[in-house]
Image (cartoon, rainbow, N blue to C red):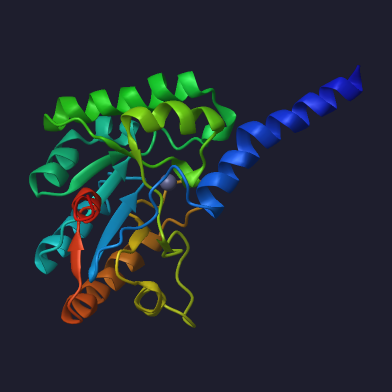
Length: 237
Ligand SMILES: [Zn+2]
């Protein structure tokens, strides 16, 4: 009997968790991890909106004339409607990052769709008047059900460049250096405008926002255009 349980559990882990991980994170199938456009990139910011950090980040983006994409948590958008409206009004794209920061591996596809994605989409639409169509799961973790069902209604976007900005940056390789080395035409860059997610350091967003301003100045001087993710991907279709 216990053997049956072990075999079933192993099969479940392989089918529900491991195969989707392989398909999306290793092979990049069923999801978008980058665009193909020359000299165009998309900056994306997860885990907000955060009353402490997001306003400062929006100021930086405005100063640099850059539009980005915010993958927000529905619960935080609900708590910060003014800030969510400001993101939208300043021309940035809003995508969904679940209602709370939970991994999709521990939830059923139906629960994710109704309690996280649709619930967050309803909140964002109520605040901004526009329903989001892009989705990024927390930690980029998808299950097999998401790959079949969510993909029909949402474009699932992961990333090609990870800033590692949830930790306070090491002096040896600051964010600026790391990003400038990795950004290529079509890159989708993952950053965070909140430090209260599990595994993140509270101080980290201050340093990210400080470093980002220099990165934006630098890459725009090199002729890169920084676009919303939907605009970056639109150039291809
Ligand atoms: Zn996240």
